[in-house]
Length: 162
View 1: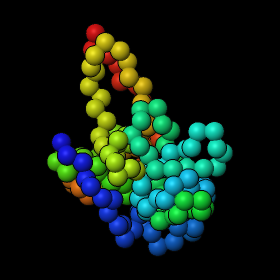
View 2: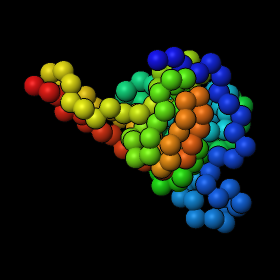
View 3: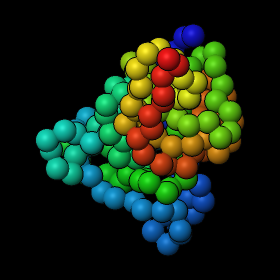
View 4: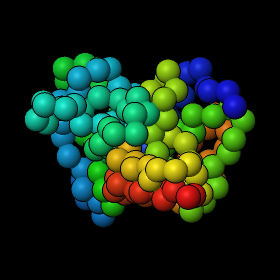
């Protein structure tokens, strides 16, 4: 499986973009961005820094804040679509599509802020805890592309197979 090499420019990020402040798109919060971030990148909380986010890197223990609504420079404030919002996210893969209903987690792609599908099949001898859950795909997300997901950053445990 190969990773995408660049984060695409997205023309719209939130379902029903017509008026973010007046529409019922879920909670949107302003944060200070610790790194340059593109619209649609999944962002995580910066540990030890209140009110700060940065693009996700795919660590299973990172905690998702939501999805950046527009490009933001490092050190600037920007809006993040949080739990309950429907927002576009980017599939990290150039070879595996995401199907509707799949749980999504952050991915370790060098591009940062991308998602992949969480495999819920038990494996190994230990339980795996994922705090890097982004949400659920609500439409198919083609390879090297983007699609809508409901943002639900809740931890998921995958049991062992033993």
